[in-house]
Image 1 (tube, one colour):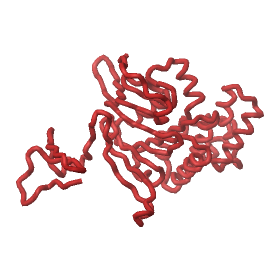
Image 2 (tube, one colour):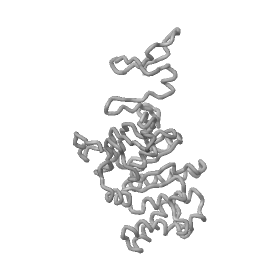
Image 3 (cartoon, rainbow, N blue to C red):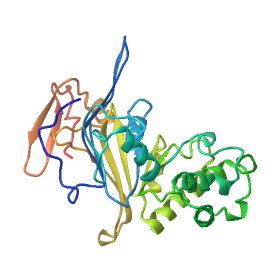
Image 4 (cartoon, rainbow, N blue to C red):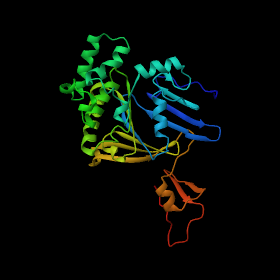
Length: 309
């Protein structure tokens, strides 16, 4: 375990999810894989955001750590006031049962096949000590929120894929956790059904204030959430932020930013690196209000291939 010399930031000034210089290393007898390489991430309470990246980028590893299903190797990772790096096994069990809900891509992992929709939602509450009356009332309320109260007596096999995922969302929220995580929740659904599921996420986010983090490889999710963080090689690389810009007469706009971590590191998008012909080193020039990035040996041409940004 890596020791830390700095005191953690006070909970009052940290984001709800606060990751700093986070590492996750998987070791076997013959192999060592670094899944997260100094990742920094901030998620505000009540935010609905997504994490995207290619296979192997580390996004599922990060989600598993946030869910309490895996433990980091070094760095800092807080959810609220809870330090997921140092928390005990018993605390992690309580965290998974009370403070975080999880929706898997495979519907078979979310629901118990021989129980009805309502019974699936009731089970986590009963395990936490709720009476059957209390569990029934909240299950009916949640199923109404996801638009499936009329099908509360249906078993999973009697529901469509999209309906199963909506029930899974209700199950994940049964104990009223402040954080909801979803791993490729629409990966097995067609686009129209996926839109319905995302509409449920948005509605619940706005009505209850639950923080929602969705992991996906589908970049079209930019239109459905407020912020998208892209991961590459175990670190955050860019952010896409959607906001309104009425003052500029543009309406809704999406802006892309490179992520700069606490050490000053940033990842230049691969297409820019390739376009500039940047190898292992680059030249940096500081101007009054920006930094210029150029290849170490600019190619011979009539003009530079780089441009100011």
